[in-house]
Image (cartoon, rainbow, N blue to C red; front, side):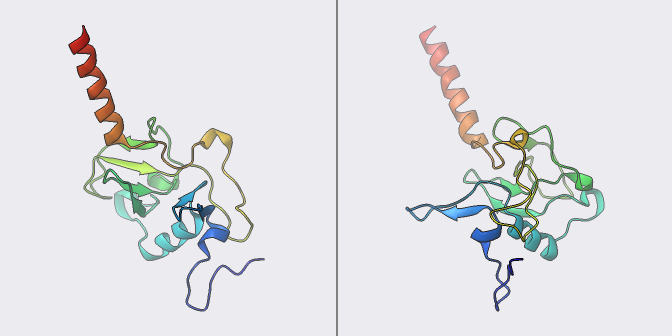
Length: 149
């Protein structure tokens, strides 16, 4: 069994959260960040109309919130778009009309590098693209098609 807490109560993120840094120093995840999710649930559990929903664990570069893999009622999130997000209003959760989700099972926080690992059906586990960038590229492609036509 792995002790995931230091004397300071800090989780050993790379060991149990399926993430690591690259040679450039950029940190990224391959699967849902289990340790971060466990800490976020302990600090800010959801309640009321959004009880069971994963808490926010980050921000994307296009300014939308990032959540873990659980939707309202603690069910696995489904119906995400190409980028790995959902467009809908959840006023009791946040003031956004779009949010990204990690998908797949989370680690049990004791096994390395993560057990259980998400299934291939949950790929890409983290969001695949940025919604704002994707929409901008579609708009540009549409303008170019109209200009050439």
